[in-house]
Image (cartoon, rainbow, N blue to C red):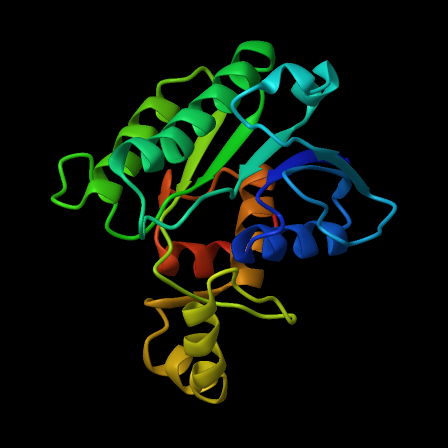
Length: 224
């Protein structure tokens, strides 16, 4: 059986990792990208939709609603953002898109990239916003909502973060990644593992609803 998936945020570090794994996976036959700017990858599986304003979804084709899964990897850094600005993207855009998809196709699997420390009652503003987003996503009538709460993610396959100082950290850590992974297998994951885990969320139900780095790594071993 072949599947069609939607990916948002594929120009970012996590989203690109998910995209590359979907392009390689034999069960995924079509990948619909929704981006603000072109991802710059040509592939027979890819159909790319450029959406300049994610607050206006009227330009999206109705056929999106027939996809089997949505991997929502789009996000922004909280640094320098007011709560209103951060909420508008993290909560507002996510719920607008998820709301439309769930109304049109309740058989869809929706995977949301949240983050370690997410807590609707947390002290940090970003944690509360993401916690609220998680809660309301799970109340939508999807077939399944899976919440990814990764901590440290090592970019692989030449992927870079859009944040400069993140890239500096990742570059320094590259020689030590195999050692760190052996020493702290439950604390570290990578962009490929996140991508494979998202695919396996579509292929199997053998996983919890909230995935930490340890859960993500374990799910990469599932075959569906």
